Image (cartoon, rainbow, N blue to C red; front, top):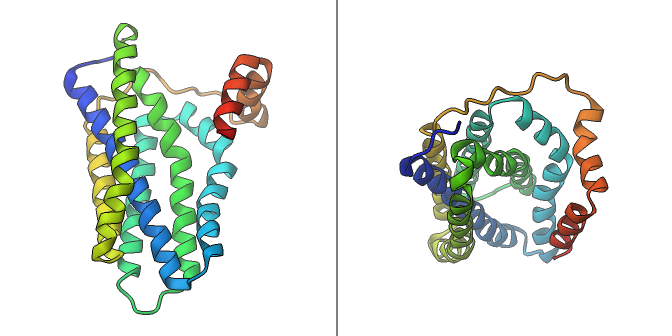
Length: 225
């Protein structure tokens, strides 16, 4: 059964709030920073694309890996890479001349890490909370997520007043705090799957969604929204 206590839920919520807030702060600061470097509105779209493409390309392998390795460790690894990306941007922003390709490369690395972080985090909560208490825990998690989505952009915009280095550093600090919170979560007792990695296994989720029209409709509505 799941090991649950208010402390466990508090740690999980702190990790989620920290990681989502960091993502929002970084999104605002990175957009302003790229525009300040290039003065090109086109580059604002491209910097978003640089983060999205790795996320899309790694969606299937990420789900496969999360099912086969302890999700807590996958989450720690992903958050650590994201924190390093924030630190790299903070260091880069201190130089007078910055190659824009370096910024795009870091953004792509951050997007790749996010492709593992989000599903690992979402699937970790059921292993921490007993089934009877899961609806309440999910409600708290949703409230924490929405709070981060509201507070993060405002914080990112305010911090950018002091220059790009400050929000990038705050991003790294928030992610480091999230890593710390996840580190102190209890390990899941559910053994990871030992099935071999195959293309059929990676595509099984898509096959399930295609067969389940209710799930397909909900996902499609959310995607277009």
